[in-house]
Image (cartoon, rainbow, N blue to C red):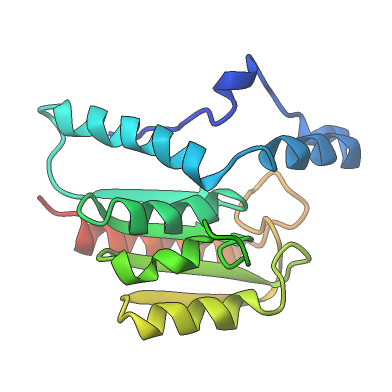
Length: 186
């Protein structure tokens, strides 16, 4: 069973057509900036409650987040440590911030395994984020794999984007599926 949340449902029917270029990308980032960890975790709680009530679903939950969704994967792993068995963040910025709700501050609560895949060239990920994230995860004994994929740019896993890097994307998905196979058993 797979759930795909509409993080913008509070704003009505919102669609993004990234083929329109930079203006549409700016609109998407502006709306994404309106999402908070607290708001997304409230929605995540609702999804987890639904999964727990479904007799077909057994075992821990896995989650995947691209770009800004990556911060919410790490936050969910720390907010719901007994439900999230594995999480994957793909080129996720803002996992480490100076805000009190920064996802990396939840590292002490994470029980599941994490995969964090980054692009070599990514203007959205601050220089300190990866080393600070590794330090937080290591300090709390979190099981994780963090990879920076050579020659890639932000968005490299999306086939319809100019940054698409097929070899790196396949490696990422193979790693995630292997992690899910290993960690999400009932």
